Length: 407
Image 1 (cartoon, rainbow, N blue to C red):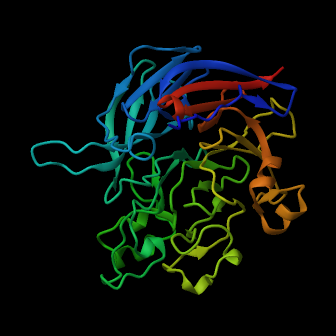
Image 2: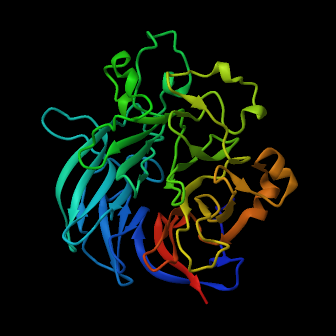
């Protein structure tokens, strides 16, 4: 009888020996995202319990600061408590605004449906108070690919959210379906851009002009579409442009520069269009949209998760405002240098430079950190150091936070 042999990971390590790794907190359960509310306090989301945990001065508080009733029928991936963002824009004291993306469980006498929600809260230093629902998104058919990451535009205060395809096949997945009138948009496979004050659509959103053509949708809130699923959104601190990571089925994972009206190409393609049998004209083109290739792809896919622009001088000029990306399957951190125009990435390997794709062998050249078991979030801390949130699938979602800093 053959017994199961689990993956064995070494302790975390990084290639730059001028830096060190420290364990900051442990004892988390299936953590998905984290955010600093100040220099000493980190809010961490636990996917399946719906608990928001507080790590204060390196100590994980026993009691959650908020408990949400979430649907967690997909225990390892997908539904649950997924994304967090903190609004520090113009903060001068008082309560801070915290945003949470979660899959709300069906409840109530009327059997309210499962929904993906974004709520806004006030953080008073101890608790999350005064919940305000600012965005509702579908959770069905699902249960796969609800996305869930959030990021805030620090200059304008716009909130971005991403939702995957939820197993839909329709216009937003670049597929014209003969079984309907092709006028239905399912609010899936999209990146949302809203005003963080109340969840309304900014008038300069790229699809605002076609709202009347799709009255049952929230198309006026869309910033891009054609997304299979994503666990990473980030704003470039230099240009204020949005970037994402995107998870492929098996052939490709991607890093994208997301311009207004972006069409990522799913479900017709993942990876560069030149490596498919698809032409640009085969995609569904909403008015105001434009397809763009990824700035980089992995082949095959490896469960890419968060993307982080390292907005800090702590590690020197080499790292400042460049990119770190994590993955869940291997527990690796990848490092990328942004090019001069900040529209792509630089590579030393001539093959990667040519096709902007790394195969299994080539990807190892891009590994900067390893042994983290599985990574769900990366954050630049207020202290200017890099923080890594881990999720160990082999140990039922056991989670830890590590800090990377100068020796």
